[in-house]
Length: 243
Image (tube, rainbow, N blue to C red; front, side):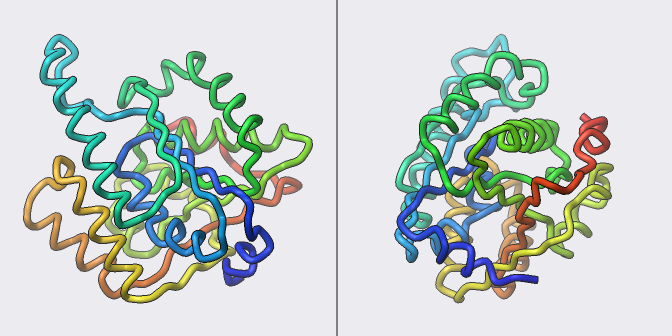
């Protein structure tokens, strides 16, 4: 397995684009990578496709609007610990990205073309949790990037052993990529990642879940990634069937 810092070193002063569906995803998925990238003068941008609001009934527009406001503020608070240079939120329907794909695919394609990132980060083809939004974003980003003439480095966040065990009911977990890039970081970076995750208070189910987060990240100072080889075949369609 390669040390991902070598890849970051080759991209000093360039751009990294994270494409994720929900406001709290960045902290969980790449809370360490976002912080480390800044040490290599890499400009970091997040495109978050939804603001959240799935738990609110569609007819309850006032409550939905309030929850979105809460989640946007939570992301801003979390970013005080992560340090993303740019936050871009799209107000697509949370939990329904597969059905609205035609509404955002071309927009995302233009965004990638215009920003010209040298690094793109998203979920691997298991989606880690198996959330339908995670799976469709993974597939769309993969399909888009491989069509570019000047292909960016595509980093897929791979579930680690703890995540595989926790999300064992995710049927797409069998299509998780084998990690080939490893990021290790300090306790301080881990602490900031935890603070960023906990900043999303509306998504912390209970005290037990908060303790689970501490158990995961307080002593496990690493994130695993798969750097895509565009010449290789990936079973994207197979994992996609679980949406």
